[in-house]
Amino acid sequence: MQERLLWAAIGTGFTFLMTSAGAGLVFFFKREMKAAIQRVFLGFAAGVMIAAAVWSLLIPAMEEAEAAGTPGWIPAAGGFVLGVLFLLGLDTLMPHLHPGAKTPEGHPSGLRRSSLLFLAVTLHNIPEGMAVGLSFALAAQHSAEPGSWMAALALAIGIGIQNFPEGTAVALPLRQEGMSRWKAFLYGAASGAVEPLFGILVVLAAGPIASVMPWLLSFAAGAMLYVVVEELIPEAHLGEHSNAGTLGVMGGFLIMMVLDVVLG
Image (cartoon, rainbow, N blue to C red; front, top):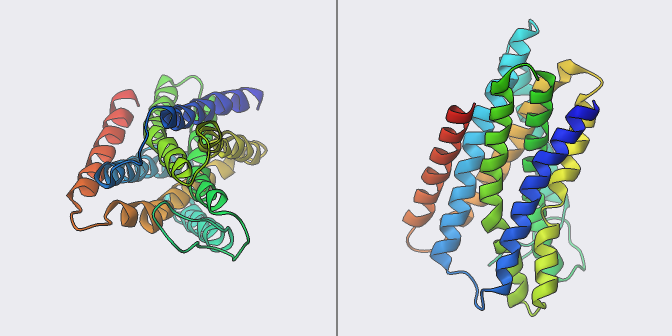
């Protein structure tokens, strides 16, 4: 268990650092990111998460279940549905505001606009932390198989790459809201702190019962795809021309797929 927790902390710690690095761009940019660039980044994140959900989560979940003598589709489908419902519940209850939007979503609250912007990206990072944490826990469970470690590494790299612009997407709007550069950076970095938190929590949940792992992998996949369909793809296609967002999705999917196949 300790080895699984350690590797989950290392993997999610890397993705958290990439979010922080992206938030650090607030010290160099004076203006808000151009809409076309923002669409590319959002699309890229969506593509990475779609590929990761399939190759890094759903397929390993089915393989784990079948190795234990259970039909692979049962935990894959059941965990997927539970993950979607989990994110649906958070999306409905947690107050948040997406960059560029005027009306907050979730339960009405008296939170400031800056806090609502922060919570929007924090919501996205929860399933990412779960996915990376579980991937490294699965690799530790099959420590004799080098391919498992490489697959976990591929997922961490892919999520880390898309977390870099995500950190920027938090910090720059907060700076535009009048927040100081240091404070905007800290908010942007803190939005990624939920990844180590949920990565470790989900490993703790999987620890006592190994048969739960396929369900949790699928759970993370469902949560990730909910974020993609509900938030990332619609936001990536705002504006008259959606080609930038579409190419971002294709590029993110391609890079994550290649990383998983080559390293896995």
